[in-house]
Image (spheres, rainbow, N blue to C red):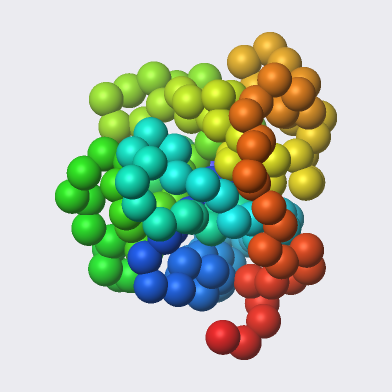
Length: 170
């Protein structure tokens, strides 16, 4: 398959989510069929959807991959499983979450995968880190920077401004 650029959203709020996200990115980057090509700053964000839980850490990354969208999803889910992710409740606490946000210019809506991610344009905790490296990326007809202008970014703060945060030893 011809390599494509995909963007991912990462987050977590159980244990040490920054270390978990760094490990997930390292595992993806170590694969022969994926290369991490850009990573956002690390953000600390209030919970969304289910608000009675600990704050999250969030980041976005771009990967160049020869995998199909479904195979990339399988790789991400495998990493989540390897890192003991349990899916107990929607929008609930988690050790790690890896979402495929975009995959080239592809629009896909299947039972298992929707690209672009169906709620990414509503979420400041996705758009703010994504704008760190892809402000001109067009999603659903608008650039990320334009979606970000109307997103709720209240209380989102930078936890680590070094975009190599994921490469630092834990």
